[in-house]
Length: 303
Image 1: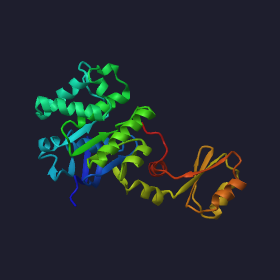
Image 2: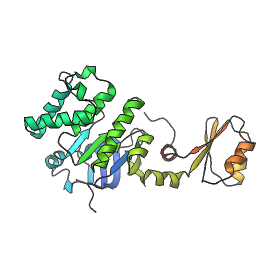
Image 3: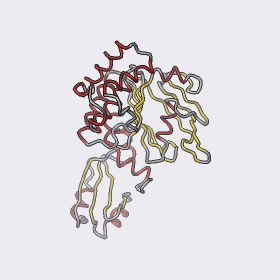
């Protein structure tokens, strides 16, 4: 099956800086595909090439089977983009922002108004149609930016960190809307720093670091492959725990005063550790995509 997006050995440089280094992946019709990575991993550089904002340095990038460097206008007419920045016009009302944007797609005035009102209802903003941007909460503005990206009925929706900075309630509202769009068959390309967001929305995802692909797969499969089913977190472990684990060939990770041990479902290891080495407390939890992310990209702070 031909992908909506086909990326082959894609490369992007800025002078001597390599932002994307030989990246290859494909996005299939109707799926939500995620791009994860720490700051500077190449996520935004990649999607900016996908929607034609930044030309590739090398490699092949096709959207709808069209080369992005040869058919930028045709591609842009069929996609919707929700950028990181809330770049709406503060001098216009909510509805006026949508109507003005519809002009870029030559949508007739009557149809543009009908579509705008439909999207405001979908995004739960119908009561704010005449409000100024300054009167909206952060969550409302993000939903407005998403509504604007959907005005032209895109075949591909590109979301660059759509819920960054939102409170939990607003974030979950956005997730519900994206899940509804996915169920309608819309193809979505998503970058995010929220592992819960990626696990909930994405059928498949990739993790980048230093512009290079680390892993690709379904979220649950990546967790099983790289971590296991559960993680034991030990606060202030007894001195003998590392030797206990080392004698059994069990890998562990030390983070400050804590020690993390991954294990498969059904293991008796937790009971042994809890009974002998948990001086400061011991917790057994499900392994998550965040465990995968931190294991592959490290725990040091990225600026």
